[in-house]
Image 1 (cartoon, rainbow, N blue to C red):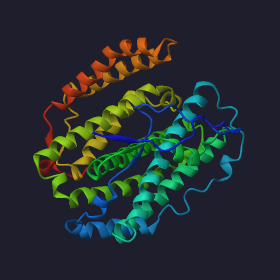
Image 2 (image 1 turned 45 degrees about the vertical axis):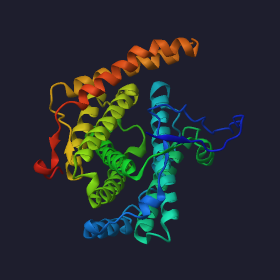
Image 3 (image 1 turned 30 degrees about the vertical axis):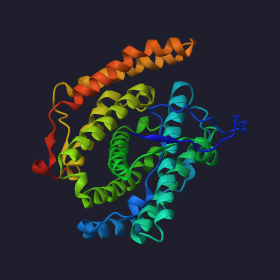
Image 4 (image 1 turned 90 degrees about the horizontal axis):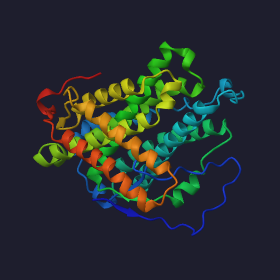
Length: 361
């Protein structure tokens, strides 16, 4: 179970400065801010993955993208022609992406600070991860500024709710979020390379190198996972790996299909995109997890789609101007549908990755 740690905040919402975007309301699909058990992380024994850890550390230290996140002259123009649904969908994409990157920065920075005198190698690693996440968040926030908006990241730091995850959950979820992030960015980048007429903003040109940061971060968390036998060599780890794969894939499906306008603006079919990203991420997880999901099962994507349809019903109910009590009862059937479909998906036979592990890219 998770527990929410409320960060002290004022009783009244601060007035928003001109150009500062009001953060979206926190929901199950909005990026969350996390904290963890720092003592337990400091006590982790990494000896079983020492060579792999050093290789990943060398990759992070090399800082291949040191000069990548520099805005060129292509940004120096008016973007007023991007309007209507495209503008709204793109700003939503920028905000959620920026919030997610900034959330990672805060967690990694705090881990680096807490581990400085107790685990120097891990402290350095998390500092390097935080460096990358800060660059990503800053670059995205500057993109929002092109549209007359930006996020007050300092305000987010103080006023968002922080959710506690034990280190094991952090390792599972961050590994998956980084790897699914890699596939999200690279698939979008490759599509726009083939269809440059749909690349309506220069940010998309940066995704090829950008996603390599995501990949390296995922590799680091793979080392952490494989260094802890309890995370991959017993029946509990098999159940947990199925659970986290499923929750990440359901969340991705709901998010992509709920914001199909953004993908439509890039001439990307959101259903096909969602399926590609999930299949690739699932295959990649073979390298770290003890088992993966059977995405070829005929019911797999059909049940994910049912979750997405139910989620759209929830959004429609929320948008109605009705008392919360009435909305609560209206939402019960849709919530039950999502839970039921997720349970059916979880009970599908998994694929043993220990016996079927292979190179996936």
